[in-house]
Image (cartoon, rainbow, N blue to C red; front, side, top):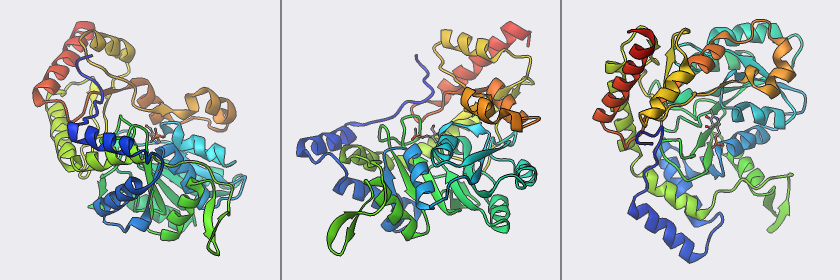
Length: 377
Ligand SMILES: Cc1ncc(COP(=O)(O)O)c(C=O)c1O
């Protein structure tokens, strides 16, 4: 495929850094992970005790919930349009997810839907928190969401899997709530293969995350003990050095993504295409267009594939996935209409730092030609 959705850039210097770690045989969590934590902290304007690197964003979300010590049978509000990991961790700690619809233009949690859903579920569920997703690198409205959460005594976790570096009103996301989680999967702007991080203003929360990350191990009276039933969510040293190398390019790569999305915007002015909102601080992990209902999205995807252009759904309307539909579908009369629309008609187009403006122009021309061939304009 000539035009990939994502294409991690790993240069010879990064390969050499990984090779050196492999040759050192210091493979598991160690000094390189700590350096990566310090680098992430410096990038986000934090101290290194406020960052824990992990094996994935899913691990980070699970650690965030464990560190908050949420009793069983509570309920947590989540967006209904996201990757399942956001909600799977809620199920894993024995809590009930309450699904909130999203905005049509930035695909993040709708504050109106948050309020209405809270009002209709609060009689029957003990709602204790919100997991908000900064979808595809767009920040959710953190002023309103935090005001609502604090007004109702709810904790907030930011699932910023796709939004490392994103800013909301000039502040980095992940730090605008109780605890934030990032992914370094290869579909993201920087990668460690699999990998993630959890960050917080509270050093105590991060200390708890680190204990849960490493089997529940802590030092007690100068000796090793196991103080909680932890897991193994550690990153390896060879993944961490890759992250250290990648982070050095991150600002340039984000600038490139921002410039490329403007090219999409300029060329994809078409009555059948709705473009995502262009907001300050967006890091454009993905560029998802939404097609009018009469456009056959899957056919367009297949036609683009014939032209060597990869495209895909953006995220999932979780109430339409088997597990969540069977378990919770009957609780939602109208379900979540915007999530349904985004799931059925959304299409992510290639966007990564390895593409040129001419590549984006070519991709746009092919999209427009496919629409013209099928719908006459
Ligand atoms: C919103 C969201 N949360 C969580 C995840 C899971 O991230 P990871 O693959 O690092 O576990 C993803 C993955 O794409 C995601 O999009």
